[in-house]
Amino acid sequence: MAPLPRITAITVLAAAVLYVFTLDPSNMASLSRIAAIVVLAAAVLYVPVRRWAAGGVCESQARMDGKTVIITGANTGIGKVTARDMAERGARVILACRSLEKAEEAAKEIRNQTGNKNVVVHKLDLASLASVRQFAKVINDAEASLDVLINNAGVMGCPRWETEDGFEMQFGVNHLGHFLLTNLLLDLLKKSAPSRVVTVSSLGHAFTSGIDFDDINYEKDYDKGESYRRSKLANVLFSRELARRLEGTGVTSNSLHPGVIYTELHRYQEKLIHGAVGARFSKVANKIIEGFVGTFGKTMEEGAQTTICCAVAEEWQNTTGLYFSDCVPKEPSAAGKDDEAAARLWDVSERMVGLKS
Ligand SMILES: NC(=O)c1ccc[n+]([C@@H]2O[C@H](COP(=O)([O-])OP(=O)(O)OC[C@H]3O[C@@H](n4cnc5c(N)ncnc54)[C@H](OP(=O)(O)O)[C@@H]3O)[C@@H](O)[C@H]2O)c1
Ligand SMILES: *[C@@H]1O[C@H](CO)[C@@H](O)[C@H](O)[C@H]1NC(C)=O
Ligand SMILES: *[C@@H]1O[C@H](CO)[C@@H](O)[C@H](O)[C@H]1NC(C)=O
View (tube, rainbow, N blue to C red):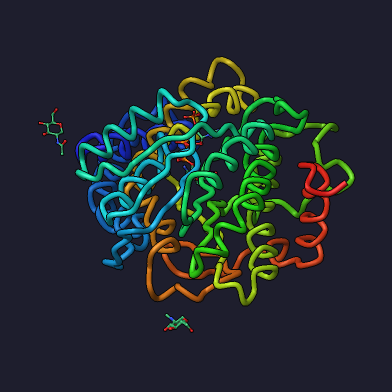
């Protein structure tokens, strides 16, 4: 968003909040006075708040010539920005996407913007184990090396849909699909060491108490928000356990929170709010959230920085088993450091995706 619409959005938002929560609407004098204060406060606070929200920047100038990078869900959002950055650094970039049409569109744009012709697309639907296996076969058969695997794709807040294999969609795509994918590419990653696995999680992982191993497929009292948070906790635990298992191989594994960014990830948001505030207010509530995230949130370029750092920065070359935010390691939640749960999740996941019977 350009600065002017942003400031307008802040003002409208703040005025709306005040109107709803604090004002006596019969007193117009107080209304205009408060409106003036809001406008002033928004103007003064805009720059510092935005600077704070922008977060860290990946300062690394590392080149990626001769290196191969796979990014899941790279046709849009922060995955696409990450793919463009890798292409700019000279990498061979593989966009792993469920829609070949959307992926080819993105690849064309990236090739054009970066002049790097080595940007290719392959079909990967994380909601299908068969598709994950097929994708991994294509990569293992054709690619001489794999230097960075970026598990970026994600789905948030959808109804209780199921994947092709009958897994609850958010856990199935965000965690299980990436779990199988990473395992099937491990030999190639080890052969290419030093190499890196980067898993895009979320701060949302900290707002759930843990994985429910008694109802891993969320059959009971499905809560779309909680399901997303658990799947993102699974990302943190998976990344940590993977790092433990890869010790000494030269392959690192880290997870991260990219920030809050207005992307297509919010495509189910209106329905989500609909449930909370009812049909009448869901449209306006959605607009307010949209304005809020669009105003104070990161741009997609800012949102991709931590992923890029974890993928290329020399200073993190030997760093593994950590959780990043704003381009530096941060503490995950207590549940995100539960090594027993991480080991158990690994075991359960292996059975679910058929790596172990
Ligand atoms: N945006 C935020 O504020 C935020 C905050 C914290 C964490 N994150 C995480 O950041 C990552 C990227 O999110 P984003 O904001 O860039 O979202 P986005 O714009 O919605 O992009 C998500 C990508 O994942 C792909 N995807 C979804 N389901 C898939 C499937 N079954 N198989 C393969 N690909 C699939 C999408 O493909 P289609 O275009 O075909 O649907 C899209 O390319 C996610 O892991 C998300 O959890 C985002
Ligand atoms: C990108 O596309 C524009 C417009 O079609 C074209 O003029 C330009 O030469 C292209 N650049 C590259 C590097 O292909
Ligand atoms: C990482 O380890 C390698 C091999 O031991 C070493 O050459 C390199 O300097 C290390 N890099 C960092 C940033 O610690």
